[in-house]
Amino acid sequence: MQPHPRLALHGITKRYPAVLANDHVDLRVGAGEIHALLGENGAGKSTLMKIVYGVTQPDAGRIEWEGRPVTIRSPAEARQLGIGMVFQHFSLFETLTVAENISLALDSREPPAQLASRIREVSESYGLPIDPLRLVHSMSVGERQRVEIVRCLLQSPQLLIMDEPTSVLTPQAVRMLFDTLRRLASQNVSILYISHKLDEVRELCDTATVLRGGRVSGTATPRAESNESLARMMVGGDLRECHLTPREAGETRLELRGLTLASTDPFGTSLHSIDLNVRAGEIVGIAGVSGNGQSELLAAISGERRVGNAASVSICGSASGTLDAAQRRRLGLSFVPEERLGRGAVPEMSLADNALLTAHSAGLVRNGLVRSDAAREFARSTITAFDVKAGSELSPANSLSGGNLQKFIVGREVRLKPKVMVVSQPTWGVDVGAALRIRQALIDLRDSGAAVLVISEELDELYAICDRLAVLFRGKLSSVHPTSQMPVEKLGSWMAGEFAQ
Image (cartoon, rainbow, N blue to C red; front, side):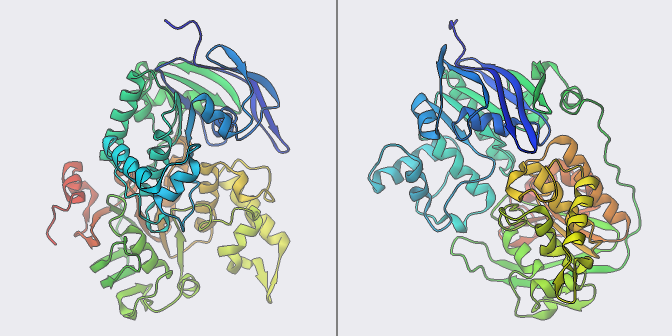
């Protein structure tokens, strides 16, 4: 038994102009303990962890490390103590290689060849293989997550903070990561684990501290709890379930015919003869391991990449392959990308200004002039309808937690009442209550007659909201089948490429 916990927080308080993020929070993490930090989006989890890592300074309270008071003024000081952190939002330079990005984060300097060799060795030993010479801009979200995790593991931390580490990892990679974390814990490494996936928390974690509204609302032993009881601690009440009522689909709204598209990225995945139709009043889901052509497919549908054959993409009966993104939106297409900051929203712009990015056609611009009052009202209504925790509609996008920004982006697109909605990773890093709200919003959109296409690595999500399912593997799409006829074992084998191509 150690006389002191590895980390102890006493009365940590952090206030911002519009919100009290942490309100006298106490937390203790022992050596070799896997400790979960739970709470809704905006409950103060990420702020608390940034204080521990030295990114943010508390307004009150104290931190003890191995029984002695410390002041952590910067991430460099945190790393010197032995604290490492994997952030939910990536901090990678897209034009640099994996090895160059990792080198910038290391306090010691290693020759490039030696560092590349160590990256390969560590990443493979932990079941998260990455190519150290690969450029980050060519990597999928899931692959970038691996870089963040490996970068942290290379620092041999004594306390490892992980903020939604499995959000975009495949089920196989999650199993490998869990094996890694258990091995680290057995070596006396402490782990602070933030996740909205309650099944994972119950399987992996020894203890859980729950935050609600910036305060500790309770502690629990996850293995002794159910998902429902943990969720009640997080939200203060029972959650409503999503309901997908069977219905007859209508006419085809989105159709892909022999869609073939060579990837412009040497590490990307080309698309090969993809056929797909999504009808009014249905949700079609596409499963697949990250990096099998999802980003290329989304670019081809959204208009980010134009296709030489106009007929290969049809939106509401109009050949659209050669149209740009704005022209496709005018046909009734709405789109939610997997990257929130930078693609779904401009980080430094306010929520009202971000509403203008795609909702300008909803009466927010008249005669070429922006109607600021209308933009602010649209943003305010979206915040209210989707329970977005934000200071106001004038808050910049990057001031919101990841889950709250996702709710705003999805809400913005849903409120445009599109004829066709394409959504990628709709509930990545979103708490259980917000995930249910987003999923129900997609179901409601489907029930209103829209055609909805969802690309997700969350199999539970696809089974909960989709009428039909298909799998994308190495740029090829399987046949599409009713969800009721796709047992998870079959879907899993298809994700490994075991379907007729």
